[in-house]
Amino acid sequence: MNILLSTLVEVINLVFQIYIFIVIARALVSWVNPDPYNPIVRFLHQATDPVLDRIRRVIPSQFGGIDFSPIILLIGLSLVRRLLLELLTQLAYRL
Image (cartoon, helix red, strand yellow):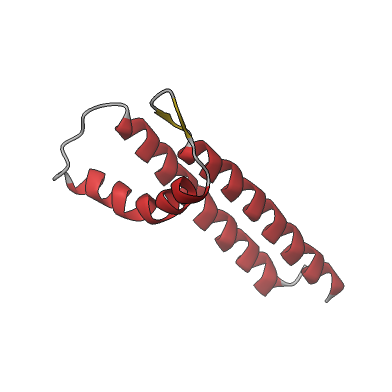
């Protein structure tokens, strides 16, 4: 496989993995009453709220007071990551 595309695949995979961890951390923090002025909590909200808000607008993802939008986002991220990496891998083998 081409070195450049191989490196690109690894970088994309790393970026997706980091964002998945951020979404998981955001979901875990939402279970407690975090200090909204804490820089880590603010970062988690700023990094995830734009995407989660779009999901909440499109799909009613709250049932019984439980917000399922992070789970929907995690599934979507996993699918997009797998599709993107597969396409890049196939492109690399064709070159």
